[in-house]
Length: 88
Image (cartoon, rainbow, N blue to C red):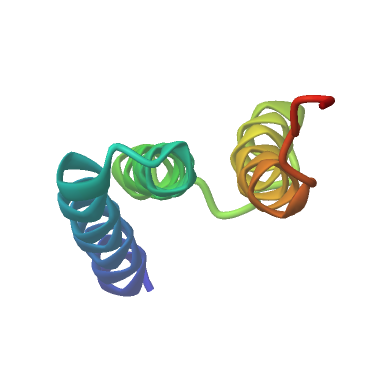
C-alpha cells in the first residue's frame, strides 16, 4: 500500500513540474497556482507515506487538501472572471 502512496506522490510532483514549465513560459498565475496545488498534494502524500499513517482522518491532512483544492478553485475563478475594461 505504501508503494502506491509513493507513486501518487511522485505523480503529483511530476504534474507540478509540468505546470511550472508552462508558468515559466507564460507567467500566467493560473499555471503557478496549479503547480503549487499539486506540489502541496505531493508533499502531503509523501509525508503520509513516510510516516505510514493508515488512517488519514486527522485534521491536518484535510487542511492541506482543503488549501490545495482552494488554490485550484482560485485559479479557475481568476481565469474566468471578466477583464476590467476602461470606461471611454
